[in-house]
Length: 541
Image (cartoon, rainbow, N blue to C red):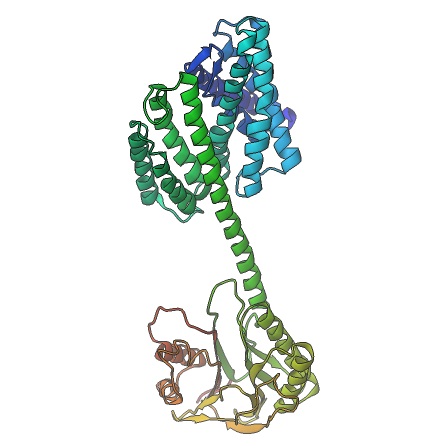
């Protein structure tokens, strides 16, 4: 331990802990009324527990030294001071042990179970050690009468519990959440929240009228927008107003004996802290779950699409894929482009019905079935029939549309396309002269009928011609308010004549979707393959 980190850092931690514990103890003992060593406000308990949780059991001498020094000046016999010191030290060690060993405690308090464990094991259970040993030490030292043992024990226990519920969370969160940038709230809003907390607290604790409930909306604000940091620091701000005014016999708890009114105030603060910490934990647990789902969805989405388009000699390629909807929902649109054994290329664009896990499974089935089928079959219609059979066999409740084409590169800088379409929007060809043609013929959606109507259609692509395949998300992105008809898509393509594949894809997107910032209602795939006028390595002259 010390050998691993060096004795100087260890000694510094012990010294800092002892000094902070001593300073907080002196402040707490200034509020001791029933006995010089018993106070309803005892922050050192939370300081000690947080230190042991963060730095380990080895810093216990800091707790013992701070407790010994703080209680040495109270006039209590030295053996009673030793008993109090032992109780305070064991309390911190026991609290940390129970949290670590029984609750698998995480100091960030981002799980509801951690907040509940801190309240029960740290706040309610471990504090009985110090209260029992401390009150017994005072009884043995004749500092309290036997009849006062119960009230002293109660004050001691509740005071220490308040330290664990108010101070320990603040220190744990302050260390584990730095630099406090994860929550959605930002500095100006935090300043407004802090000002509101101080103002409302001053109002509540300067009037006898019970107005405590007006503080809870601020706690909800802190938990929703600033999570654990906002919750614990907000509670400390309220406590900085509530405790001095309550001690001065002002506010809703005025009129009670000093220890009782301080216990009431601290009880309210402890319950508020526990409530808001649970709310913050629920929020962060939900956010963590959403992030995990989004990560899984993104990874799954990437696995269903090519990592990049391959290089085809003499052919430019470009693709624009946009996933619509929430980040944790996997879309059903897909595309692929891969070579065959006979130097041909297979191009695929498809759209699976629906979204989510079921659609993703069908998308994976479609993509990899098409790849496997393309090894066995040369006719696109046969490839689609094999996919139709696979969907009916493995995903009978699903269906999809697919446009599948085989590209054979010719020796004269051109290409021949053999195309089969299963219920998918028919591809378009932008000719080098700027004219646009629709190719193929509609077929049956796959996964619906055991014998779909599928046919092969051939078309020649000359140098400068571009093949455009897309999903209906391109034309129906803002349906039903705006649906792009074939004439609009043709006009958009005509304006891109003579451009590269990348420029065509960009131009079509801009013309069809425009500058709208609204989220498209469906996934979009736009795949462009353009035959180059001059193949790579050729001299255009």
